[in-house]
Length: 242
Image 1: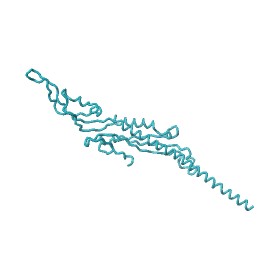
Image 2: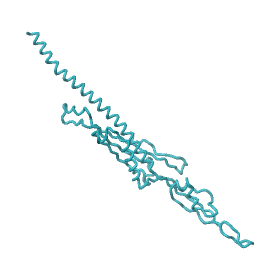
Image 3: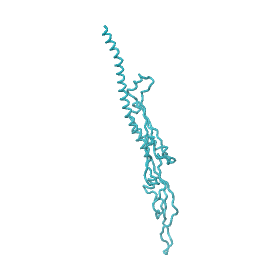
Image 4: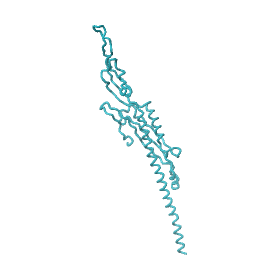
């Protein structure tokens, strides 16, 4: 009788231990599964944010300020035969501001030359980038690309969500002295609905294990030509690290 009682007590003591082990095992499985999905979704969120920032950075017009010597115009000058064609100076150089694609790439600066041609090539006084519609196009481009690439795990159909905020403040001309000019910054935010971790509320009913949140930062940079050193440059890419 004594031996049976001991065995019965041992079996009774094993049950809580077994239940505890099973619970811990299930908790570990839940954490591994849901954090695996979370890690994959966060990487996709970063990729989608990077693509959005790059798309925004491409929404740019490049401008130049040129000094153009219009040269001479074809006139009729007095000569022994009456009137002889000649070229007469058109006056002082003029300042022209416009898109680089038009004035430089397509040689639109020649429109400002007089009929005998300009005196040499134009001098580039300044060069900068300006974002279309005050940066609104950059925001539209970023959101469009993000919607295409956002993680499926963070889609509303799977119980998640995601969105971005686009900072175009470093595109304005009054930020030209900033080392991050011209850049677009995209902050991406998303959450993944857990599949298994929610049962951990059994441990702490006040804890919320229903969602796992993620945030990423992306920087889209645009090359610009520095007239001071004649080199193409772009801002550093460490904004998101600061």
